[in-house]
Length: 414
Image (tube, rainbow, N blue to C red; front, side):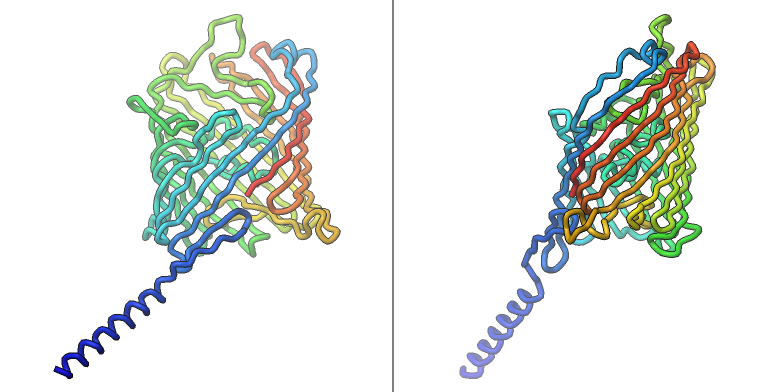
């Protein structure tokens, strides 16, 4: 009997010791910290989250010549909250992810990124199911938080933004080669909803780093393409590189003298090569977009756009390139403004963009923009941007209208 009691005591002690060991192995602590945003992480690393957001307040002043005013009317000076977003990124059990992001800039919530998925899937990499940016155009997929100019170039006229679907991407050969591919619905990028038959798209992007010395010295090349089932009408339009300006190019025909000519198309194809070169504080970036539409009532219209830009960080910083995602990332000043006598980081940038929406019976217009920018990065999360945009616009009557835009932005993001 005594041996049985002793055995039970030993067994109980072993159970207690095992429970204590399991409890010690399962670290249930949770830490909250700042790293370019508010972050949290469980002690065992299984759960992580980041609470982020951005606020961009813009102002613009316009100067038009007589032809430009005759074609488009007056461009009104103004200001706006260009973006006012809150977002939550999370990792669950190390491999599972979700993200939700809303923009409140227009006074009511507009859905932006909203997806769930997983990472580390063999051969596939990362899977996102929901609404995300389609992998077409380096300029488009690089976040507005890190762009060199207040607005993206004219090439993004043909680049879709966010759409609901399944999005895959991965990196190979030590991040020297990346791919992105997705199947999407042509949806409403403010709600994530999509309805009706057809209206789907296949979009893919392949990139490489033929030369990579380090994160500050590299050559990036890539090509992307998108096939879009239209089964209805399609329209392409663009402002100059100023969001407060009016639309100046539109395939639905800007003139009120004749009924608008719409493009009724079965499908559309867009192909775009891209390039970026970074050598310390200097960088170059260029894109070309070709767009083809299989139309019913007009001769298959073809449009195109291109851009080329350069920048110089005069305080010695460098544009940061995320090799695993093939996109640009946050720049951190060597010395923050108002800290230890620092002046922050200063960048000079220059870009030329051209868009042609004239083809056959479609007279959407031609636009060329020269944009000069000064970026003053106070610290990793705050900056001021100053842009001057000189635009030349040609309408269907061959009136060469010109306008100047002076704009600035105050930005905080985390």
